[in-house]
Length: 167
Image (cartoon, rainbow, N blue to C red; front, side):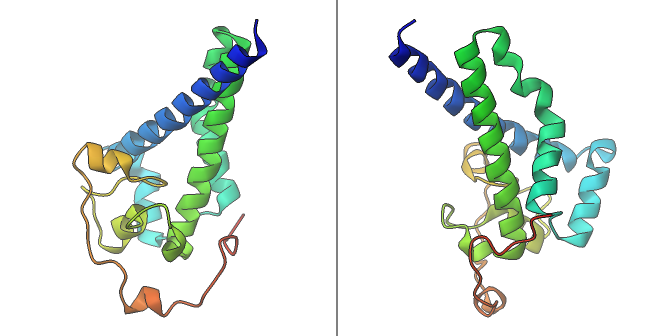
């Protein structure tokens, strides 16, 4: 097969997996807010209002989606590689973004408002379910803008993008 076509397929499946992973994450987060059984650990997360560290968040995402990450290998190898890499990249990005929103939400430059941070700060059980992205909140009507940048956030010590709890 043509190397250019292989590269295009890898990129297409990477992008599709990345976007689909964000959609699954959004709906799983919503499900955690309505199901007592599925949401038990999540309710503890809300009580503590802290992330478990980037690496542990990433491991949780891997445990929850490992089977799905390998599905496209049954289709073709290039689709499988793109799908796996897109899934892994989203899991890493989401783990990082989740921890960043708990520790340093002003650094979430890719969103107008760090939705997961305000989800916790204002006890939003029916709004702002995105962890790394706010796309699906906008699409499904769960985005609720608030004035989130208060004196508390402005007075936090300045920290870099990598100054987070990693494990």
